[in-house]
Amino acid sequence: MFLASLIFFTPSLSATEDITVRRRMSERLPTLDALKLSGHLGENNLGYLEERKELTPEQAVLVAAENGDRKTIYSIIAIKTYTTGKLIGQHRARILSERSLKGVWLQSENGEWRKK
Image (cartoon, rainbow, N blue to C red; front, side, top):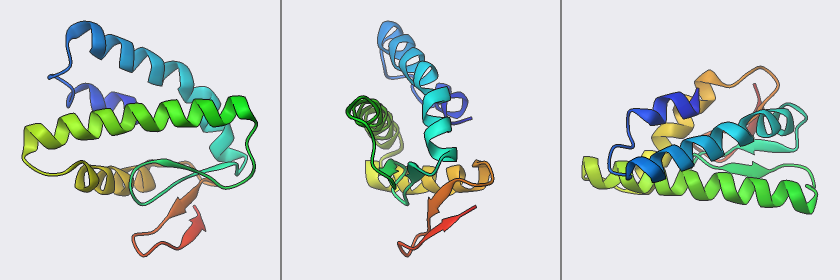
């Protein structure tokens, strides 16, 4: 879902960069979804993944890569919409909260964590 909604918003990436970012995010999605459902990760209120239980070094690298790609996309959208990456991330966090599967940890706007 996240990836599909970003396709529309990433026109300022070059075609090659766009394909590369989408491919990386798509490839990570099954592993990240499993980590979220297991309680190891949650979606924070800034639109990024956050560790909830200890991750292996490989998992931590995967999360950092995902968050890096999200930051890139949020920045691109912010430039195109004359706002900030932080506001885009917060908006995306609300969307992710609505679309997340039952059992995923979500951080509310006031910083409290809850399981959906």
